[in-house]
Image (tube, rainbow, N blue to C red; front, side):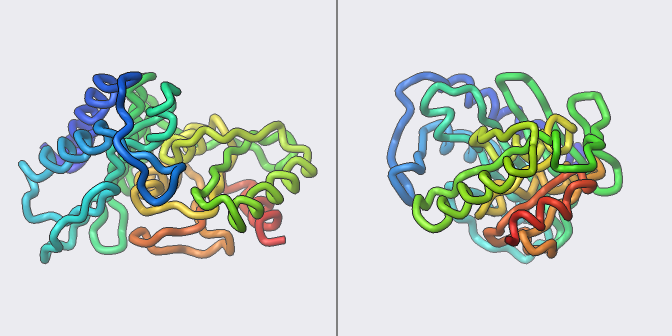
Length: 258
């Protein structure tokens, strides 16, 4: 099995775990704040994903949300969110997924995002395009903010960053956007940009496991992902993420920088 096959296999195993626990008594604890939850499904899914990959690539590195892993000499790093959208999951809201990316050094090689509720598998390999199940993905062709549907996310901090996000929302509505959504699962948000369902997504601060897979999926679908200054960023550090169909990217940045 190649890298992509293993990533897809692992993501679907995680999805099975999600559905097994969904709507049960699943809250375990709070993490960094009272708004950031951890469930048994997060832990089980991460263990399953990591073990599935390690069966084939035991020397690779792992950067995942719930646990730390010993560093190896390998150039390859798997970047994993075993359950993106945990707060949705724990509330019985069926908007969540598993996100898996593979990088060699600073270069993303592939990304997989699996939504078990809709059985939607978004995936991409470098220079090979992006797909939703068997259909090739392409970003939409909206060329102005007016009439565009956007997505945002709220960082767990409820102070300065939240206020900034709310101010940006107001500014975008003044641009006559079609509407704005906050779905609560960044990997799906990014995948929806890649699929053309929305024209852009931004969030103040995302961790690598939130954005890595979605980043390559968007780029392989013809979109753009930068920070809020229009610059490239490290795939290994938390970043301000701005993504789009490319056509409205400059317009997004203009709003977010003012």
